[in-house]
Length: 282
Image (cartoon, rainbow, N blue to C red; front, side, top):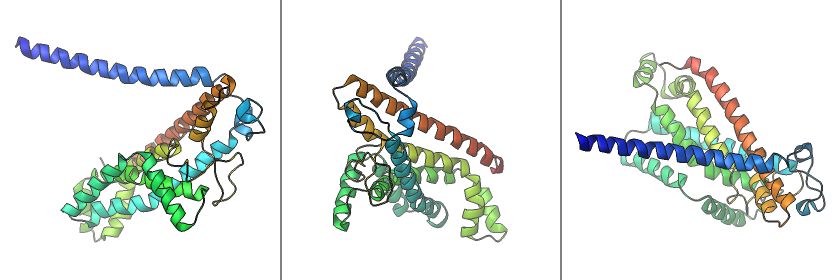
């Protein structure tokens, strides 16, 4: 009995310590970004592009990187959605339980854990093969590859949570598999699908390694799919690489902007998900 109490106390302390470590790390990261980035944050950063000598501490902003990140991650998320949703529906509606289905899910899990630099190297090789240069389109395609396994597995798990009786009732009423997927499953899993898209978007907009050689970098606003595009993670990287403290503080301000974008998108996603929840059968 005493041994059981000791084991329970040990694991309780371990859980509390782990929770405190996670929460403490979160507040430490956010605190550092806010304390160093907030004083350097100003209207110019949102409304202007880098001017001559910006990385030496002169005037300008990161409007090019903000729009570039939104275009890159938004385009990549749309491209990934066009592939992820059909795959998820196929795995849950059309495919039977088999070794092939399990192999597909295993492959997606492996791709999920793969370092983003590998996606960047693969996409860079693909762009060279196609005769393309680093561009906004190239960055979108790279982020689509990066987000694909995240979005697909998230949607797959969301659709798997739909009660079997609901699908069987749809079939009993004469609905086809396609009608069941579009009119029943998508409505039931809308909150989960939005969450999966947000997770994938968050991974895409915060990644630097995969777009370093495929999207390039420019101080101009993105104006063409075939021209280079800036991104916030690379803006942070380049600003931190300078020896000027004022520019380094701007890097933390850029990181704070990126964090705020993710926060706003999370709030919007939660609001939309709550509206779709009323259609979910519990």
